[in-house]
Amino acid sequence: GAVVSQHPSWVICKSGTSVKIECRSLDFQATTMFWYRQFPKQSLMLMATSNEGSKATYEQGVEKDKFLINHASLTLSTLTVTSAHPEDSSFYICSRGVRETQYFGPGTRLLVL
Amino acid sequence: GENVEQHPSTLSVQEGDSAVIKCTYSDSASNYFPWYKQELGKGPQLIIDIRSNVGEKKDQRIAVTLNKTAKHFSLHITETQPEDSAVYFCAASIGGGTASKLTFGTGTRLQVTL
Image (cartoon, rainbow over all chains, first blue to last red; front, side, top):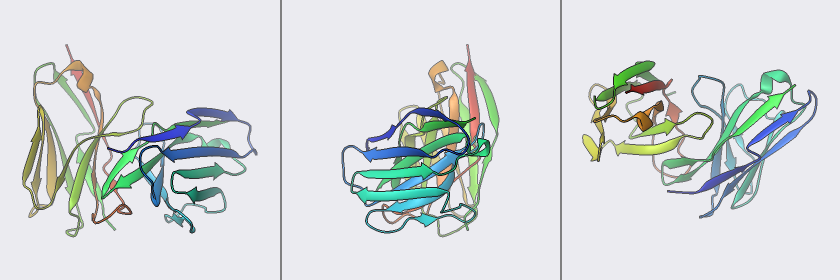
């Protein structure tokens, strides 16, 4: 399977600040990566599809101006939570596909105070 | 769009017993069905998957069955061990490439007791 890393693994920030989360594909290049959000004891919800060299595709209900995605290289996608608020506190997980199979990173836990 | 339902939400079994988790999907075009295991505080790990051209797949103690007509698929874990305790998610997609989106079930918390 694919090897995906995320950084940081956890972050605590004050309300109103922005937080950047990195997702790296360590073994293969990835033209497409995915970002998910998972609230406690809930399932994974797809936020957006990150496309290398072009704009991300956001799922319905996800604010693209709040969750900025940049996929500037074939091994790195970043998610920036802008002006974070306590309700943005969640577990953010990225994945990359190998054919139709998705392999997930270890996740980033965000706590906004 | 696709909708995936998963049952049960919690499952407790004794070590050595079998565990079965069931999922149904709504979109008959879905053709790829992975299962993930998620331990506390970690990302999901793929444990087994099945494509629509196959009715059953087995990997050691884990097996998955697919009934395309009824649009449901199941995960079977035999000889359960304490380390099998985790949350399990089923998913479905219309597979075909690296941009295929997954729709997840709601998850099953499996507890294997000694």
